[in-house]
Structure formats: C-alpha cells, structure tokens
Image (cartoon, rainbow, N blue to C red):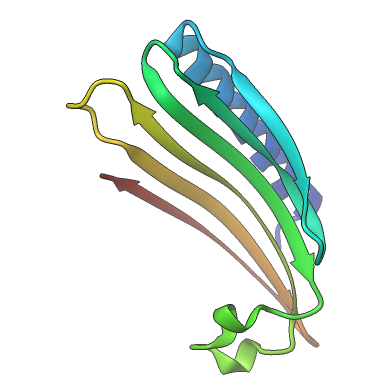
Amino acid sequence: MPDISRVKAFLLQLQEDICHRLAAEDGGAQFAEDSWQRPGGGGGQSRVLRDGTVFEQAGVNFSHVHGDQMPASATAHRPELAGRSFEAMGVSLVIHPRNPYVPTSHANVRFLSLRSRVLIRCGGLAVALT
C-alpha cells in the first residue's frame, strides 16, 4: 500500500515540475499561486498562468481533502461506500494555448483512500484533448 505522505510529496513535486516547465516553455508569464482551505477538511494550491506568449491561460492545481464520510454524490451509484471516511488528493491541469490550431488539454492524476474497518486505496489518471 502506498504511503500517503509519499503520494502527497510526489503530487506536490509534480505540480511544481509542470508549472516550471510550462513557464519555461511560455518564456514570459509566471504562475500566480493561491492557497485555499476546505471547511470540511483539507485544502490545496491553485496556480494560474495568464496572458502568456504561448499560453493564453494555464491552471495547475493540487488538492488534498478529507472527511468523515464520502459526499452523497460519490456514493449515489456505490451505496456500499456510504459512511466511510475518505482522503483524496490529486493534481489537475487545464491548458489553453494561444494558437487556435493547438487543442486545449485537460488532465488529472488522483489518489483516493477510503476507510471503514478495512483500508481501501486507489489511484487514477485521466487525460482529455478538446
């Protein structure tokens, strides 16, 4: 089973690496950062590059949230998960290039840990070009 602190460190470094490389590729704009807290537990870092040379806008966000029970929207199709505590973290990005012939891209890397009497952990990756 993955160590949650190592997963978090990996995802924070991933966010840092992506931001560094996008800013270098853009050659002009830098990322602005905003930290936030979730009232139910956890928080994250939102980073946005705006009005760049290559990128009209690029967002690279990290979140690490937790709670005593899964949200109803998460258990609607999986009622056996209701009542379990959870911890979720991930990096998501959306990139809008200035060039209209280059597609917008969106990607997520996620990690989810659920608890009841037994610990369940899973991860995932999703990428979309539009």
